[in-house]
Image (cartoon, rainbow, N blue to C red):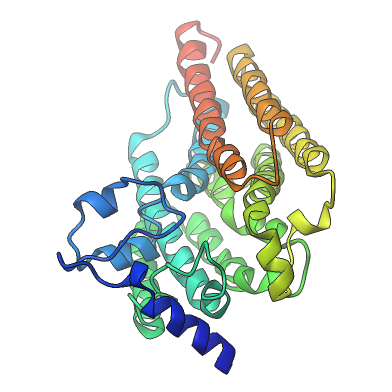
Length: 336
């Protein structure tokens, strides 16, 4: 770590805004939603680690979880079942929570020197001194072990598929140092569940799962480009790269293009898996929501970008509900 970085970290740690409160707690992270459950209810000693795992910002967990649930349900549509396996949905939910937490903690460990120099991230647990880098790594290992205990409940093919994703997870935090497309690597890593859900049901992969995964990757490039626009000025100063910088003056065109391509791939995946009209109607509604994101996007306004990024939780919920409705209605109507 350079002397400049140490000075920045020390300045942030010494800032009155980051001093421990008299109740033994610490103030909220700057970019966390106000009044989140971690700040209000979690024991003071747990808060730094819960913040490190982004438990105060569940949007990332939802975005990681929904492709898993989509994939499980899409596989059950192709099997003609009336609903997905609830135990499997629960296992993926637990896995998404702990592995998203592990990924965020690892990302913060890798980026700790950069985070200390950016106003939006300087109050995070590592740069603010709430959690040491060594303790953060121990936390990553602990969460990963829990994730492994969840993984071994699945079939052998799914276990091996899950382990194979670790290479992408490991390299992702370094990508913004070398490529203007770190969002593509994030998409590849973050949406691995779109493959694993199908594999957990079927014991193998097939074209619908691959198309679903490809669509999810493009969806992630779109919404994370929106998110990255919060940090473009800081990224330029620090020499970091992103698609937000690559796309220049017309990000709505690029984000919209990725969204349209994602929708088409999801439609193709559904068609090949045997979905019916209700699913395609759900995808059409999602397209309208994505059109709202793109048409109202103001990349010069961080709050505007954050709201549209978070709106992708609604995209995930709508696709899942459309698939769930498809299984139930098709079974009831005797179409399965």
